[in-house]
Length: 58
Image (cartoon, rainbow, N blue to C red; front, top):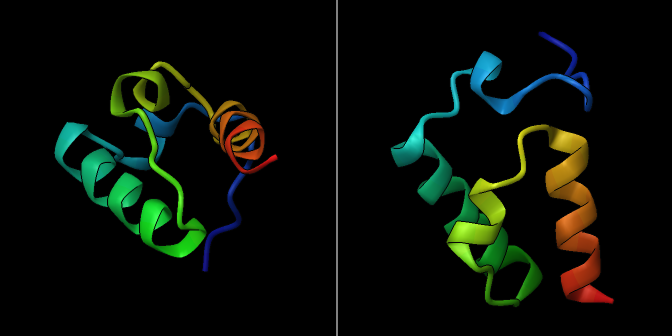
């Protein structure tokens, strides 16, 4: 099992546009929030995406 480094770019983990949409859909379902896909895709790292999501649920 691989550890996820929050500072690594999502692309290095194989997150392409199709996979990103799937992940965003799962996040929306789990957190019960609407995620702006364009804004989420601007986030390049796990840490950046996490910060964006924390702002949404705050």
